[in-house]
Length: 130
Image (tube, rainbow, N blue to C red; front, side, top):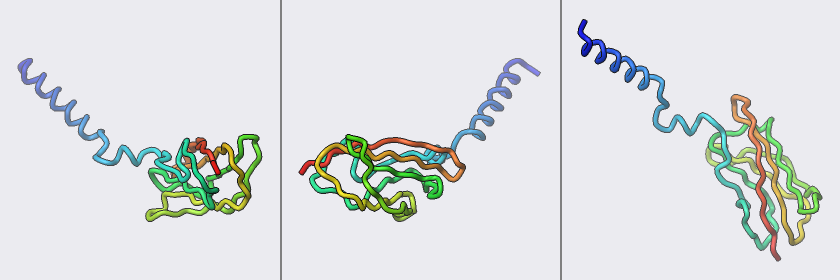
């Protein structure tokens, strides 16, 4: 076997292996759950107290492993209702806000997990200006 033929066969094998193990189009975005948007949005200034919080993810979060807390700048917890799945493809966590809110800074703290149990968490600060 000639050196050129051997090198060609090795290169073809490496290319085939790379193609076989590469993520398919769109598949890479489905591998890990991530927050894609929220209402209120991160660092937003809103003029009316929200009646609910909406956290939208790249795929459906596991409702049983999800927790959302709303706190004022002083650390006071604002009462919220039961978390539910929403959105057209159930990729959003919907949280009713049942407590009173006055003007000031607030932080939404959240934790959730994907169907494989991989947990993620984060915070969303916003300001209520009246």
